[in-house]
Amino acid sequence: LRPHSLHPVLLFAETEAARTEAIAYLRQGSADGALVVTTHPADPLPARIADTGVPAVLFARPALPVPLSYVD
Image (cartoon, rainbow, N blue to C red; front, side, top):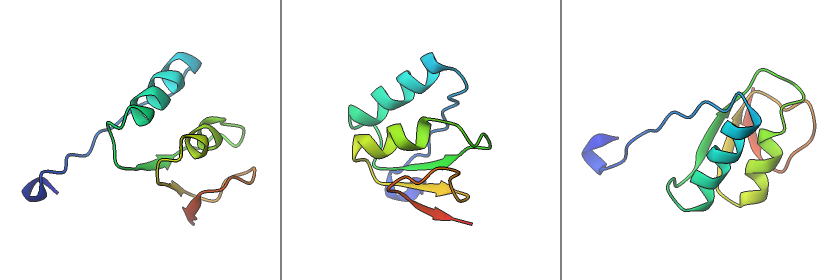
């Protein structure tokens, strides 16, 4: 990715404050998209990311339906 001036950024969103910070990061246009890895079925982050309109893909099928693509 670096030869194309693309840099992966890793964010941990384990708390509500961290989730809010991650959503703000996406909303301000700091990322072109998101790959979401979550292991908690009730995690609200996938739905919140879907609400931003930022392209995103979930790593694993979500427990609750969200309008995002996923890879099983």
